[in-house]
Image (cartoon, rainbow, N blue to C red; front, side):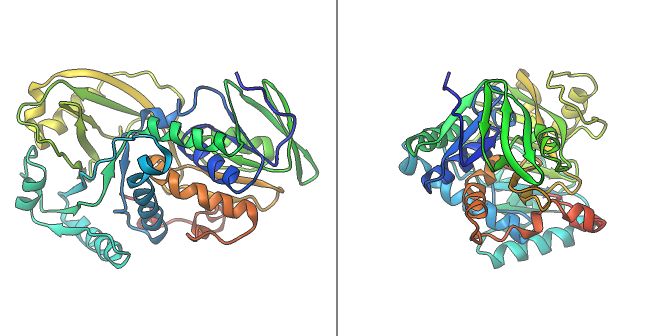
Length: 385
């Protein structure tokens, strides 16, 4: 176990992809960084991530973050000496509700304006790029061939090694018990391994961020939501390249996992909570119903493994990135709502720049936590894909 230092310029709370990316970029810039993680590095939500990496978002800031993530992961093996199994198999969104078509058309136009090579295609073309699907009821599809997939745990380890090589101290098995303040100034972080003197904290604690924020007197509206995943046995006729395929509006998705498929969909009846036990219950029959409709050949493959993990959800399903206004200095990068792995590479430089007092290359002002207090969200402002 790494000894907890007595002091640091900044303490990063959370050792998933967001935390280690931030620790790496800060340490690379000469900042004295201590990262604390209650479990193993990447052992929280990152360990259960699907590994998708995309730029096919419907807002400027998310497209820019996604493009930066794709660029970094494509070069990851060369830059960090760690193989992450990066594959550009693409993303395919199947549109089944005519009312949603205009929103997808607007999204494609915005993506194209930023250089994303996505496009609206007909059902026959969707079948060509994702041969396993049944296109009954599919009106159109958004095909983004430049999107990709990689292995989250490998990326975490690559960033962790890079952070350590620049002098960062990464401590696992350490829980945060409190944040000390002198008025509005942070003075230290209390942990199960002792106290670290510091004037700055960066919360990258994912689904556990609300509690960390509360230690500093900052409300971070992040809720844990369980997401379950099933991996099948071998699927007959599975192509070598299978795009991450998402049916909308059900959000049922699948992608290749070994010689089978990984499949999931968000349970509309799930309540917030930290329970990560897999429970087939009524969820598995509903998943089977969605799979039978959209990728029927998978039903002959059977279930090989299944697990559950946590999404860190915010009210508008967009991440919270910035620095608190009432406390000096409490920074946060959390609430990624299922997009943390793909945005991790871009968030590291953003948080480095915010800490150093310079404008990030990607403007993240729209992601400040104060947006929730300042206005009421409309339905169109939610991150639907």
